Length: 420
Ligand code: ASP
Image 1: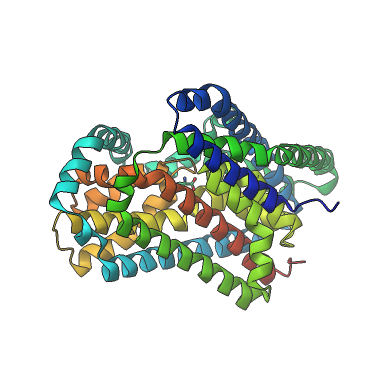
Image 2 (image 1 turned 30 degrees about the vertical axis):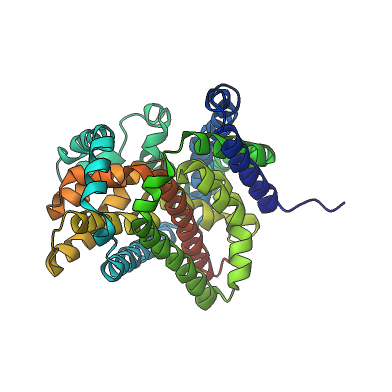
């Protein structure tokens, strides 16, 4: 029998997880059962993905950079990558603002629902505000300072320091380019083979993916809040989802225009990573799979993918920036505030920066949303309004985040003549 394609296997795992979650939530013992016997397997799956994120970045980026012939090639690709990332993020925020101004989801929230939501989620919202406070107290150059670690082992010991590990890997790779080739050879061979081992580990973990997503989704469904809130927030969720769907179409179009690869080819190639991003809500955890798909199924040269994708996973979050723009304006609308054009232009800037600063982990976009709200003078307590529905939207925006990275990787590869 022909083996089912990976995305079908993952999709079946997801659907069975949702189904089981729905069935078990009907019983009183269902939720504790899932907590004790199913959730741990989801956690094991996510942990194993996170486990290889740092070694993968180190290995593949050092190899990627050292494969380049000279520093000018590195700076050319680097500049192109960063410019494309910023450009796609600006498109995403603008799409979000356009949609939220046309649909005006905030006007569908009644006074009653607003009070109910705020009293129910005030606690969680305060927690996010506190997390954001820490970020806000940092000086303007703090983000730049944070990129350079003082100890590489310390930096690699924490998955949230991905940018520091990326910095070290690029720096190390530059050192390798600058020394005579025969001196760099042993180190290069070591990282080549280190890389192959890590890629094999990803293959092995992917064998468990259908079961992993099954456990993740079953848990999520039993932990979800009541359905009534979803209805109240329906128009807001619809606005975010419409924006995210528009971005997917946008990626398919630019990939098609620049690389001449059809939308079907692009989506089929990236689908397993998208499904995994959706199930884990973390671009960082999905990174190993995104890399594998982009290299082996979308034809992007390994050197380009291993440079463009880890950076993208950390700084390019189009879905997150779009969501932040929509959420900020939605909260303003729900509080009856009128946002001037200048305030909305301000949101374009802050949402772009906030998405760059968001960590590639579940719920990070919401922490940075606080900063967007504060900048635009929108009540931060409004976070409580959108809390109930944040997780499902997080799943969708994470999917868009990694799809954007893949699209940019293909475009960079094509323009560098490195697309197979
Ligand atoms: N979960 C998202 C990601 O990992 C970030 C966010 O919360 O928007 O890409």
